[in-house]
Structure formats: structure tokens, C-alpha cells
Length: 119
Image 1: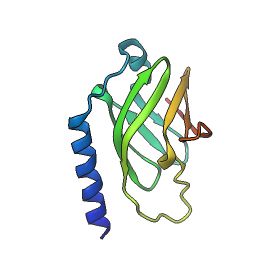
Image 2: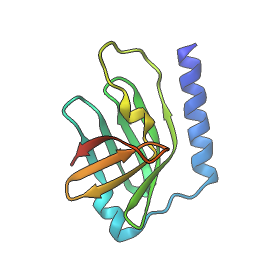
Image 3: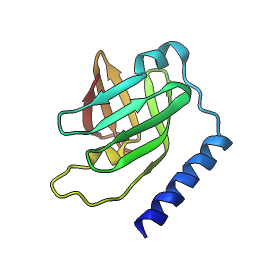
Image 4: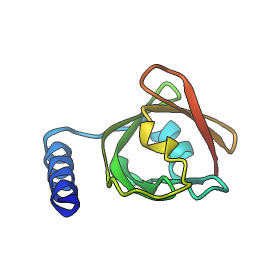
């Protein structure tokens, strides 16, 4: 069942990626690109062409990102749904982020800060 859910999530992500363009402000996007992590094992990799991958310390994340006026927006994010005892999976709730120097502040759909990652 978990494997089927994962495959459906990946298929939906790939279909959405082909149907929507992912653009980012070139200068601002260069600031966001790279690996962002915390000491608990959460990690986001913002790659070229708006590709997103990472982990919340337990589950794998994949999706897209774009940046407009200094705000990073995450979309079409799919995640595995494994149970990992003692792991805070806060990163699964990401919606947007802002960068200040080498710190990324991650916010949920309501605009509430849910965590921070460092470059």
C-alpha cells in the first residue's frame, strides 16, 4: 500500500511538472539554490530549473520551487509517509520560505514559521 501511494505521488508530481513551468527570478534564485539543512536531519536541496528534493529526517520530499520578490514558494510537493519514531517531520508542512543571509525561514500555508534551515 505504501509503495502504491509513493508511486501515485511521484506520478502526480511528474505530471504536474510537465504541465506547469517553473521559473525563478535569476538573481534571487541564485541566492536560494543549494542545500539547506538543520542538525536534526531535515534537508532541502533547491536545484536548477526549480527542482526540489530533500528529507524531513524520515520521509523523502520532492517538488518544485520558485522565487518572486524574495519569497520562495514550494509547490507540487510530494512526500513518502513512513512512520519514524522520535522524528519531527515539520518540514512536510512547508509552503513558502524567506532567506536572510545563510538562514532560510520556512513557513506553512497559514504563514506561520515552522522551522529554519541553514546553508
